[in-house]
Length: 150
Image (cartoon, rainbow, N blue to C red; front, side, top):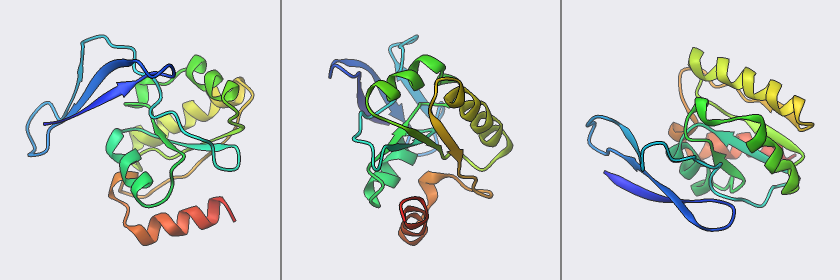
């Protein structure tokens, strides 16, 4: 299992997010149980926007390929209007929701888009077919980046 320290906006470690690397269960584990997970990591918005993804490996893949304004929410149930409102305070104007392409991910993306609208953030959804942001190769991420920030 790979474990990542998760820091809040003040830099304090609030939890550890672990991911099994060999297919064991559970695939993801958050320690301590019941930890309030922030949006992670704190990023500088590119042209006033952040890309919101579901998991830490989605975020790492996008950062690795040049989209350094990607943040993860640690699952579709861990996002709310308060967290989105904090983005506005940090200078974010737009949230690009980039969840998994399955039905659950796209249903959650619609809900997040509605929450963002309610807190005054512009938002849009980038829908993938049968994949997730963590599986995208470099060329696909570069194409996405050029479309988003042309």
